[in-house]
Length: 195
Image (cartoon, rainbow, N blue to C red):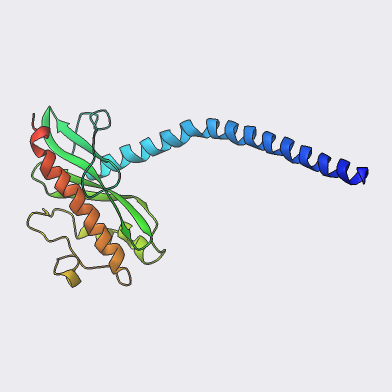
């Protein structure tokens, strides 16, 4: 009987030691990767800013404004762009969780008149081969040089002007929703950009 108790005790001690070592190892690896992950995210954001904004000479990342809109769960980042101290546009992150598989996070670049310069998909969890086509040039082209005040960004099934992706109408609707959220914030904050 005492041999069984010794074996059980040894197994418990072994598990505790393995758990402690694993915990320290995971913590150490996490500490090593936090910095590079944050740098990679920042680099993706800076590259997206270059793709969606008109030519600018300020540092939009340093001038970022974070606001909490009514329609989004997370705060939204607004990156104003200036050329020779004159407002030329803003990049705004639009977020929705109404995608087929949940989160869709995009960066929408507007020129100073509110026209969409370009859009970059930052995060999405949509179905490969269907919903992931929101990143495609053909789909994104529908939004370029359009002003959401005069262009209905809803899908045609809902009375809008956007051709939904085949087999991914829910994703297309969610994408339009994220664009609308970004545009609403652009309109709300437009006066503050020109100061």
